[in-house]
Length: 455
Ligand code: NDP
Image 1 (cartoon, helix red, strand yellow):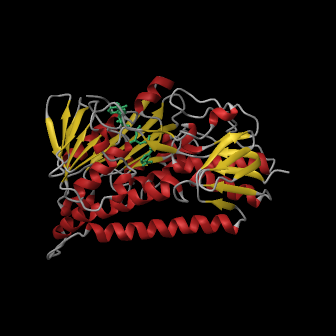
Image 2: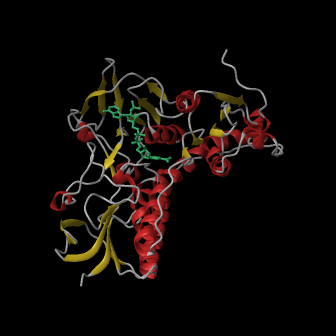
Image 3: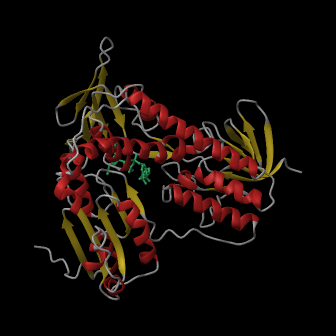
């Protein structure tokens, strides 16, 4: 008999959910984690990132308070104190994950596991070999850096950013995706001279065009120096002063204390032993799976970012849950990838669900757009300049709302609720007959009556 019914490689959000569900269904389960229990989201992703976003927002909030009659005395921010508290919270959450595993009877190995044969893994630190009837790969992704960029070793990624000892005076960030945009907001908010270098013309490719423009302008408004149509050519470090300089393809040179690469992530498969059992991967290294997360090899599954489907924590969790229910509870379930709400914690943040205007036009042809851009009430007194964007994308044939996009304060919170309506197939008339909640920002979603006509 095998040592376990299920061995899970990777104790991130997806792996932990799958392991616990399988154990709750009566399976003998083990899980291995090479870094820290909790994975990217808890340890060096969503959670600490959002804490950094919160920290950085106080700068504006303190300033805004003056507009409401507050007199603000001397204020200061102590980065090491904040980081200590951030890591205390991460430790606390990691501890909860570990306890939850053990409470459901999952054996956790806090070391790296590699596949050495069918139904067999090896723990690399202890050298222990373990057999299991089924193996689930949930190793996630890792930040990618172009290895051919001269001086790339002087850069950090979203892994190291949570371990900065002090706040840099100047940072240069490469990329125009989620991570680049979120951290540009964080550092600018904390008073760091921040430059974002993006190869395209407007950040957040793939998002609705209005969202992209709004976020792009928001970055500039927050004081981020945005350089477009440009990439890094060479990075050099002055060993004496520690100062970094980066040459860009547009011919300019930027000086910085920290340079961060946020140019995408790749599935974490290196050295995992996929070739030992013949697991197929795509060109970018993603493990190829079917709708039940089955790989091409019998008794081996993969979920989460390592499969590069929709790389979001709640998706990995649902894939893990669906795997466990299908395999250990005999209830075949597949993940539904339609209308997944998501957020970008830029400043102001983005909340989005469904299709962009461009994708909807491409898919359905006839589309109506309802759009509002306005200054939220709070800003009238706070002095904050940013405006809110609310946009509904409606399919003409049946008036179903196929997309909703918001850029503005609390938009991630709002979109979670709107996501239910969109998922249920709510129509524009359904939105219209919902009574407004006044005064709120979100009431605009149910009061937009005029179709937007491009000027
Ligand atoms: P993204 O894929 O979102 O963005 C990568 C960025 O890097 C793009 O702007 C891309 O440009 C640019 N880029 C890619 N290759 C190069 C290159 N060779 N030279 C210069 N620029 C390049 O990746 P992130 O690293 O920001 O995030 C990874 C994933 O993590 C996200 O896709 C998301 O799934 C997840 N995530 C989700 C968050 C959330 O839900 N809030 C937060 C953080 C991450 P171009 O646009 O031209 O392709």
